[in-house]
Image (cartoon, rainbow, N blue to C red):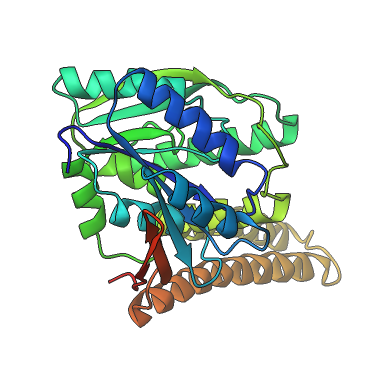
Length: 319
C-alpha cells in the first residue's frame, strides 16, 4: 500500500449518468496534484446500468474499486461498506453527483497530511437550491440533533476526510442502525473544518423523495439520540399541569355552586389524555422496534462481489 494513499468512497444508487464523469473528474484532480488514490464506488443495489459501468471502469482504470451489494441497503450501509473496503491511510466520503466539489478534496488532503489533524470536515456555506420547506425541515432536524447530542451539526455533511485511526474506530462500532454524519463527530479526534458551496448535480435527479427524507431523519434521530423519548416525559408533565389547573377550576366551581352541566369537559379531557397516551406509546414502540432490529444482529449489508483491476473477488457480510 502506498504511503499516504487516499481512498475516496462514493456511494452510488442509480447513477449511470454520473459514474464515468465523476471518475474522470476526480481522477484528473488527484493526478494533477500527485495524490496516490483509489476510488471505491459502492453500488447500492442500483436498478440501472451502474454496476456494468463500474465493472467496465475497473478494467480500464486500476485505481477504481467496485463494490456490489446483493440488494439496496441504503446510503448509510454503503458508506460503512466503503469504509470497510477502503485501504487508504485516509478516507474521503463524497457523493457521486459531484455536489461535493472534488477540488476541495485536495485542500482536505493537504490539511490532513501536513498538520496534526485526524478529521477534516466539510461544512456547507449554503444549502444550494432547496425549497423553503426542505430548508426549514433541515434546520429543525439539526437543532434537535445539536440539543440532544451536544454535537455541533450545523451545516454538517457526509463530505469529510477521516484518518485511518478514525476509520478503524468507526468500523469497530457494533451497532447496526447508524448515522455516519453524527457518529464521525461523536468518536472525537482532532478535527479541522473546511467550507464549500454545494454544486449543481452533474446529471440526473436526486434520489431522495420527501417521504424518504422524513424516514431517514426519524431513523437518524432515533438511532443516535433518545430525545424523542423525552417528549413522552414532557407530555406527561404538561398533562399533569393541565389536570391540576382544570381540577382546581372544577373544584372551585363546585364549591361555589357553578359547576358546568353535561360531559363536554370530561370528553375533552378524555380525548386529550387518550391522544397523549397513544402518541407516547407510538414513540416507545418505535424505539422498541429499533431495539428489536439491533438484537437480531443481522448484517448492515451483504457484499455480493468486489472488483479490483477487472478481477472479481468474493463478497462478504458485515460482521
